Length: 65
Image (cartoon, rainbow, N blue to C red; front, side):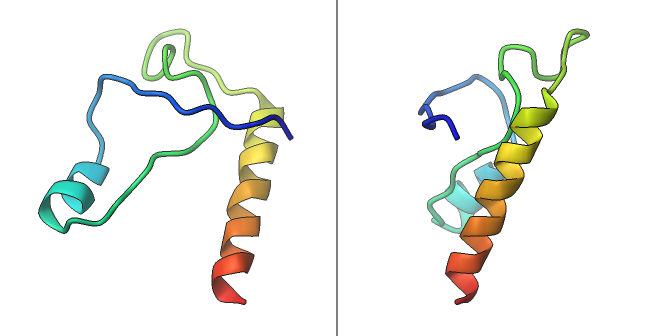
């Protein structure tokens, strides 16, 4: 699995409520290129979906153990 990169994007998502209304530290993580998000060229490589699924599963296992 490739190392994760930290980045920023201009946009809005539901984490606003968690961060600003409930003071819950939050991050957004998922597959795809944010430069192409919600555009006519938006696409996600299946390998990225598989990698993200593995990260989510590992995180859930850690939390639930």
